[in-house]
Image 1 (tube, rainbow, N blue to C red):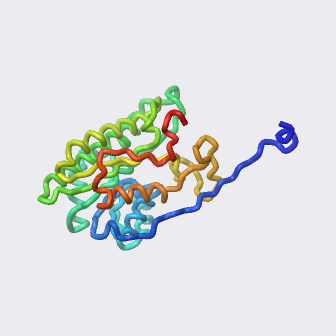
Image 2 (image 1 turned 135 degrees about the vertical axis):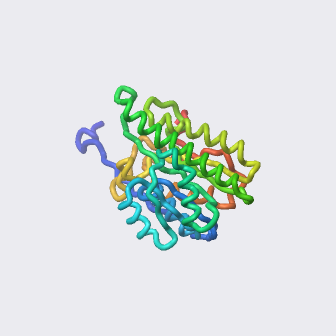
Image 3 (image 1 turned 90 degrees about the vertical axis):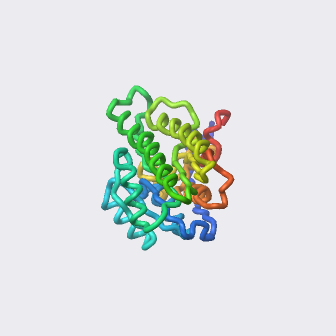
Length: 270
């Protein structure tokens, strides 16, 4: 206490070093969609998948952002402007992507999502509820549904889905973002049980608070977070490693799982 009185409350500063596995071309020959791939986590998932040999198509609503991302990601990345809340055109979207790839779509990363950060239920509006439900839950649900139906129309039905949820999906919640993610966990597990016999895998990845525009965490700033088990936020590259593993054939024994990427913070006794 004397030290605090004299010196004040200590300030902690943490930087996070990017640690990535060496590319081993685990996704060579695969065509993969990454929704919400123009920035944030989706961008880094696309980047990692390209490093592993995949061809990627990123989607989003902002064409300027998609153009910039595709240019940075290189010749193995293409883009298509599409609103993940546009349920009525999901099947047409999948067909268009298949045409762009010139062949089968081997994987889907359903990543598009928004958060309005209401804090608690007292700040939730009907408009905010609807916008988050439409993109995070309804949009992801019908995107996965359309992709599975596309695979089922092929002779070779094998395919792979990874849905990005959140650590909030593992806890009770009172705001739409967390509720959409909890419901997503449920449909991931159920879809997976109904299609694995056809060779279609469905899994989820539930990141902790990851540096991005949506979270407001600056990857180049102080990554200290005293409420995290390891006192830090996470980098999108870390989460992209897990997604890449699930997209690859080396994880063929895994389906219907929700893998939390928050160092166990969601576990209640923490």
